[in-house]
Length: 466
Image 1 (tube, rainbow, N blue to C red):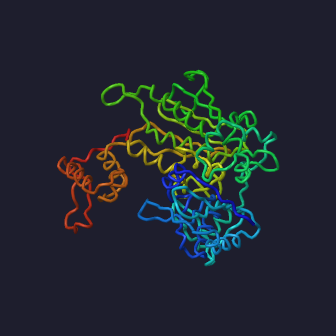
Image 2: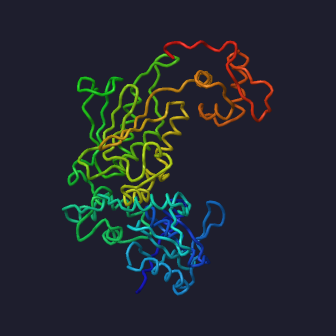
Image 3: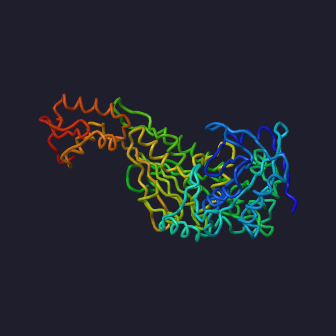
């Protein structure tokens, strides 16, 4: 069949370079052996889908250059491998790209997440994580991968409305200006499976309808401000009427983050110098809300709820943790309940999910930098609740004293872990101050690499409150 050749602008090409290699994109030089590209095909198909550019080479770390095929026929070997890999003609789309300032053709291939596990030509199944194609050779890895493949996403369900709900919308027109490669809106939406059988899908409506809540009334975010520290808010403790954030997902995320930030900054708290501004790291709020929006279960008839208390922010997302993800492994594992939403939101200009798969990790890191306690994640029957608590961790000295109340000794590595301090020398200075104050003392007759500390002569007596 004839393969389309699509021109892309200089600005669009620059955006491709700026995004670089990541969870949803991979670059390969045209010289790559055709069989080797099956590792990328396998990795994308087994994860959340992605985009493969053959004819763009990495010339240095993070720097890329166009190096296209001279003729369409020069890519025949690569095309044959791709077509053999997807023998039914589904789960992939490809075309050649041209640019007026560059020579040759780049083969651009979009790969969808497949319903089955796909192995590369070496017989190994790969999984895309960040910019890596990770081999899944352990039986437990393959078992988890097969389990995740059995999940059907509500984002693919059809909405009983006309396709012009999304084909002629302002969000799509704005988004289309940055699409690579350039395409007609309706044709592109059909290729992305956001239009099926002349009906828009739930994912298409959420991403590109101007008012998706007209068809999906419980796809909004509600924000509440409660003037209390109690475990639950009440009508009497509501500071104002709940705020409802509607609109397409991209707009919804940024509007909800901004409104939450405004409300928290108006809460006075008592600090060392009197009343201080209530502060949370913006990136923590952003990541928790983004995570709730892209991973919630849209088949559940409920909104996302953001509750702002005097001492914490709670974000409740409909649906339990998906697939094999648990509260215990949530920072190490990831599962895209709505892979199209996740992937296409990442294609927006200034995407809200920039570091795919790192949302809650970023939240934890942001809270730790300000010495706040770790977020609390609770899985309920039909929802997940993430709490950002406005509770400062103790000083390093207090944390070390607390640790030695329950343990016989402590060393530099352990202290850095519990105090979230990266520098070994910084911890050495803290230990020295504590030794000078008689709070701890060094264990004698140990080599330097096994230095440890125990309670000192002035170690504080435990109180009932502690």
